[in-house]
Every structure is written in structure tokens, then in C-alpha cells.
View 1 (cartoon, rainbow, N blue to C red):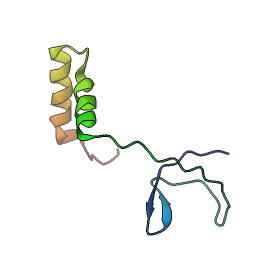
View 2: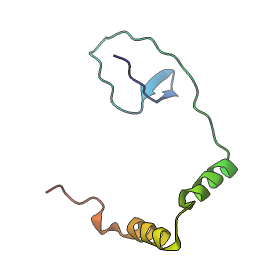
View 3: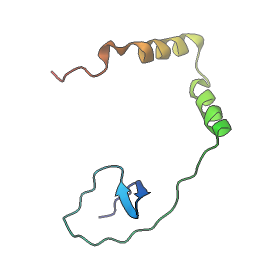
View 4: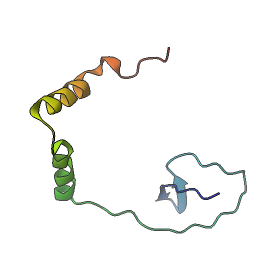
Length: 77
């Protein structure tokens, strides 16, 4: 079974950023490929594309939902 997992390298150890499904002491083969680093201008450009093609009404609805924190972190029923 192949898993794709992002990891961070800290103190000489690769640390997965999400859980992996492996038994203890399982040996694996790693292919290390650094993730691309975006410049602040590239990040801003991507952020501006979020609303591309949406109407003013759709944008207003999305922003209202994002700003309404009443539904965030509600306990499961």
C-alpha cells in the first residue's frame, strides 16, 4: 500500500504531518521532494483568484458564512 504524506524535517528526523497507517518498526522507502515555496506575491495572487468568476451576491454570501462563527466548533449531535 502506497501512502503520500507530507512531513517536516526537524532535529534530524522526518515527522509526518498527518497520521500514517503503519505497524511499529515497519521499514519504508522514502522519496524526498521539497514542496515549492511561494513568494508573498504568489500567495496574494492565488488569494485574489478565490472569487474569480463569482457574482457580487455569491461573494457576499461566502464572506457572510466565513464571518459567522456561530456554527464553528459546535459539539456533534
